[in-house]
Length: 117
Image (cartoon, rainbow, N blue to C red; front, side, top):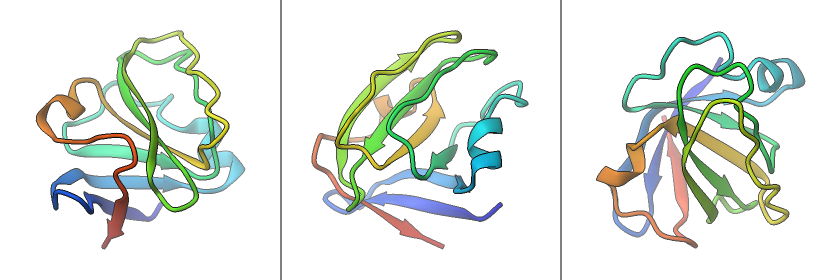
């Protein structure tokens, strides 16, 4: 699986150091289901996607919904296990992060995330 760093264009802050890209049906279905935890600085970028669930998960997530230009259109903090996120019609992809990851960064709606190697 390919990994990228995601940087907030407005602030220059690193939002996630290492995001795996789940870009095919199999990797999107499996997602983070087989993981016991997600280390700080890591995440999963689901492409395409506009909604997620945490059924079978063992931990909570912070979730970013991005439009086709990777602009943040919705932020869901601390999505607990066995829940369903809202469907975000403007979203084309979703970034899953460990819960409370977003408390340490300055991220706002409409911020654009830039992928970097």
